[in-house]
Image (cartoon, rainbow, N blue to C red; front, side, top):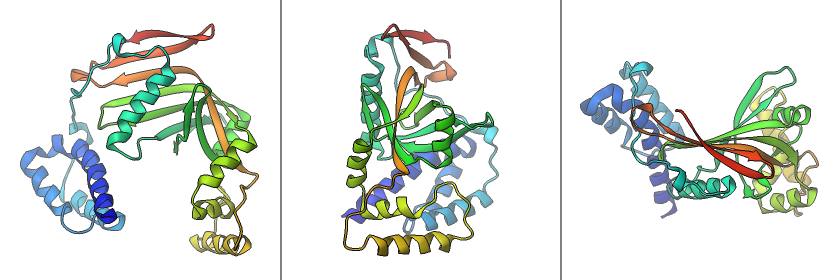
Length: 270
């Protein structure tokens, strides 16, 4: 049963990406032919990667030819909640109904050299205080935030034709809150937080494997404590933008700006 659910989720997730990037360029006949080559067999990551490689070799696709018209939903001011945190929570829960990784968000920081740096992290808490994610404080993003706490995040849910942008400042959450979340993680993930020197160069993959074995032995028959260099950040938002795809690229864009302790809502040109 569990294997069936996993395969269905993989198939659904792959279907969203595949349809968006292939349909317009291939036409129905070629799309069906290409899809059939991907359907048989187990859709595991290794197998899927091999099938995608074979498909890309058979299909001459121009990225300029990829087109999709957004027509699923609209976004009117009357649809918007007065608090953007509540609005984000509503959209996020709708997205999670269809895709389990919908809590993924692209986090952008600014390096000490002034370059924007983006990567995907997972939102783990959302309340009136802001958006919480967890990471290694000594990682590249941790160091970026230490030197410049201004950050941006972007959620993108193509199956709903929606995205949300958030700007704000990031700060560490309390050690107690980080401890509580760390205890809820699977033991393997707890050990990984000790084993990985995140963002540091490694000589080979087996270096990480060796360090993981050492940590496994170190904490054998005991609870794994939270590493002092690992914990949560809370993004205290100052700006939200809710984007709903519309036909002919005439999208709906609603922004919320923090003004005098409240939120001012306005519409933007697409």
